[in-house]
Image (cartoon, rainbow, N blue to C red; front, top):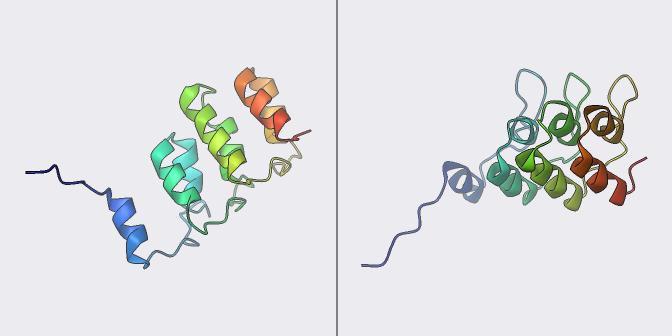
Length: 124
């Protein structure tokens, strides 16, 4: 008997067409933002394949890209998420409420791989 492909709950929900991608959590963030900050690579990948707003700004003034740098650890997982966000067209120029960009946060934290990705994407 052939192995049955098991779909993740998110894949099933997205396939149903009944998902409101604009729904926000208590911080005003769409599903992409906590998925990015918590390091859920596959969830980020799936969400980026939808019409979700890649540049949604939550109540803290952060996008998924900013949260990946600010709340991430700079390791391989968060760097991969940053790469996915950049490749999907997330705006690398959006700054937080204090005017600090993701590139500046990455430099302050010594996240060299993230700095490289952001710089190659045109961040200043």
